[in-house]
Image 1 (cartoon, each protein chain N blue to C red):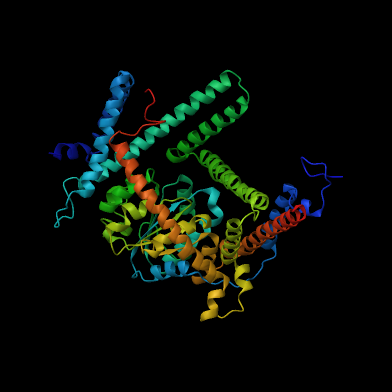
Image 2: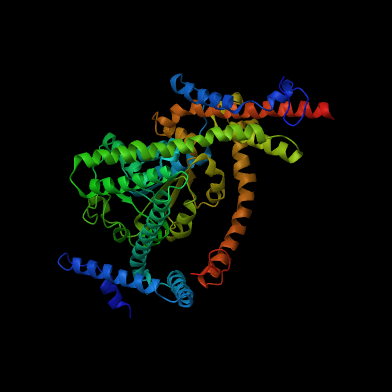
Length: 270
Length: 284
């Protein structure tokens, strides 16, 4: 039943590949055009149908018994094409994101709204990264490679690290200001936090290094106390939370799969 | 004279202890982080059972075994995830295991390629024969579902677009049952996807996780259940692992800074609380 589909999605020889690519692009443009012009009342059932079919595919593949000889069921071979389709959809959402950024920030610049220069910086950075990234990947230009390295490894990565490092400063400030032992619970929390923090760093280990490594008193070494807190107290609490999350996640998944979910993203006019 | 905000009472030492200027805190933190990098502090370090378990799991893989290393991290968590990546790759290559590296993050892909190339040079690993880099792969869930059944089909090309099917390192690798271990180095909760979609598909598969320290506590239940064989917890875990593989890397060097920063935070909390307790006692 699925043989023609499998044949269609199989690897194509290089001489016909461009025709398939061109055909796929044309088909995609046509589909986008049709979807955009679809009446509003027809969109929701269509989205519900596609969501249901996609979920049905993975659920059936997962639950349907496998043939012991091949270790597969009738859908297993389509997992890889489905994953590629998923990657393609991911790529398309990226395009949507870029288009949205261009529209929002282009409008900011055109109307000279407050902070418009930030929008200029964002768009210049985005266009530069894409341009030099493509030139680095597909061109044989050493200059472009150097510029891309400066942009990616010299700037982006370090700015990312800088932004994240700032958290340390806020944590110090916030913990100093907010951590007050106003109740028994807060006191227990602070003592526990101190023990875990001490157990996490060598200076904490040094404090109880005089205690034996084995035997009864070894339990009082700060790293062992930390380990006990994490593996016993913390793990038990997390298990309970994870269990609740799992049940909730299952319920939400079913609601989304069957398009029963209501609320912010699901009742909006599209 | 300074007064407590909202009151006309003069501020005494106990009030001041609760309201140290944040710029002073920032400078203190900066000093305790930078100083130990120039003046190394040697402190005893005990290897945690979680790190030891990960090390033992790698040790138990037979020579020539196949390990996938996923590096889902970016520049923001470089301080923790970079030494973790380097430590685990050193161990894998020291043990002459076949290694496939890839990432669900673009930055992570670049980082892991740089690190793996450097470590591979140290151990005489040949690209394509002993190790391969599959590059950046978006949409983690679908990639995981796919690699369970068909690894060559999922990673048809390496990071440079070269076909992987003829590479010696890919020979004999069809699906997840041919993989001995997966190590995920991440700054996110992606371990849940690995456990949910991949780990159960091969009962013999060892799954190791190297999270940032802040994420480590939430992974303990999965180590208890055996779904995660071992955890390398943040920079501390990386330092312990470096100790186990007999190397001194960024993590070991950074332990002094981490120690002093922790001590500073605790001292500041104590100072603030001393001021708070005395003030409260006086008022009552």
